[in-house]
Length: 155
Image (cartoon, rainbow, N blue to C red):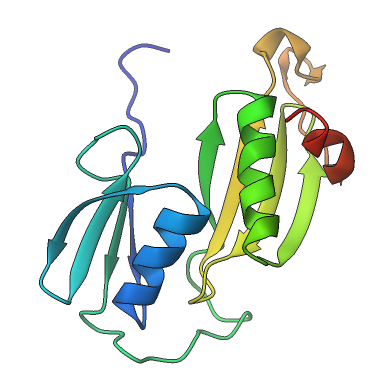
């Protein structure tokens, strides 16, 4: 839909900037674009100025927030297709990242996990809109288990 706003980036408070940079680079494949001393970093895919900002301005060496606190549930990273999503899941597993969940939402396939500071992340791929389940003409999302083994066979 042309002309509508899009979400451009997320900026996260972290407790250890170097550790967070390593996670976002090594596990998720982001490229480091810029740092602001030892207080902030900006990472992206494809040379964009930043998709993820990380900072320790108010959180250096801080504790992980409790799971029952308010705040960000997760942010999502959209992959272009199932094969690229499978490659991303393989990197998670190779780095020992615990997967919190894997769901088929009818409109998309999604994997959920947390970064080292407890920030929730979803990686997903959308199905083509003509394949979406619909009810009264509108997308009708579902939540069914996603077979990670079948996903990985796409790699």
